[in-house]
Image 1 (cartoon, rainbow, N blue to C red):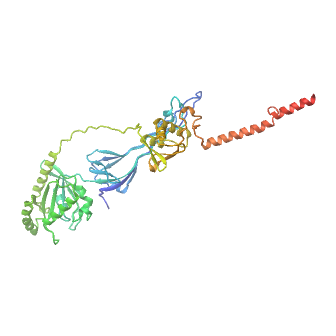
Image 2 (cartoon, rainbow, N blue to C red; image 1 turned 180 degrees about the vertical axis):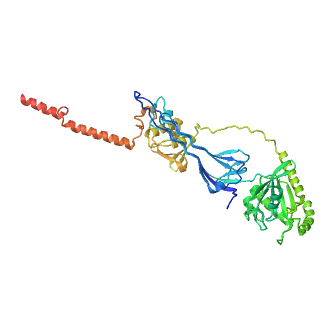
Image 3 (cartoon, one colour; image 1 turned 60 degrees about the vertical axis):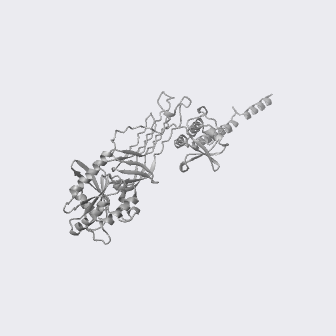
Length: 494
């Protein structure tokens, strides 16, 4: 069963904002109570948080779909909806967040580092917040905005000071098991190590971490074996230790050729040229291994490498190797600039940005901009008054003027929003704006098409008018026909 996962595809969705409420205060002896609809709650955010107790992405491998809760809708009596609960996803230290196209969004290093990957939608305003001097009792409210939805890739790059690299079965797991308290799987067959292992090593006053990277083979940087999956784990290391097998029985292999092969794969992967190297000639407890180490040691030192003859079985040379690694780690830490307290500067994106563009595309006019698109998402198109309010806002923003300049005529097709979620209008430039033209709540006389309920009510009113007219035709007290009969009767008497 898989217990270590260092790359997952994650699908997150923030919570939607709650809808605003359209309500009118009703109380005995208060016929003009006014609007009292509350605002909707904000949707929950999705946040990645570095947790030092988490070492794998296994949870997201089994459950890749995560969603925050939605905001609650507002209610009458000026009651605001509750905000959605934020969803916090713990990730290991060293997690890299990439979007679907492979672009790096964040590199999460350090316990407590947080990154909001999906922002929750804002709640819609209730009619109490929309009331003004001209629009004293709005019959509509704004809808809540949908939360962000995003597909991303999480990659784990192990945060270790030293990485042990080498061929499969070179003895890397055995070395880390005796250098630290780590207990990796050890066996006498290749690719025993399927996941990176971390161990904490103490050398004098220096404490550092060592990573055992799964074995590399020729072509690892191109995807052969397990190398491509785990080469990323050596990117953050301060030093590399080549573990060379001096007792291998495979034909055509020796410590020098193994070193050249591993160096070629590291160079093909890239980004590791400046890391200091150490060479550990392992398995020197075997007689043939000691003889081979004596032969190649001079050649390795001539190439500028520091060479250590070690044995995980007899613990030969491990103390010298551990102190050499500690010296490189100490130098790397000292060379780093002093980390000062980061001054957090908040630069929020302006929500009242008035910028927008009007372009002509294939016979229609497209309006793009943060404000127009947000207003369209918040509009309830089943309510005529809400649509009229949207028309007023767009006119005040200058959209109608820009449409005139772009050559739009009456009845032109106007599209607001992106391609996947756009709203299409038939533009009526003669439509005057202003709340003074409003009729009953929920209606706007500027629109000929009424709601079905309004049509049914008006049909009933016309039916009553027709019935009254038909009755009046035979009513002797009110019809003109009865008056004529009275005149004829008067003439007969004369």
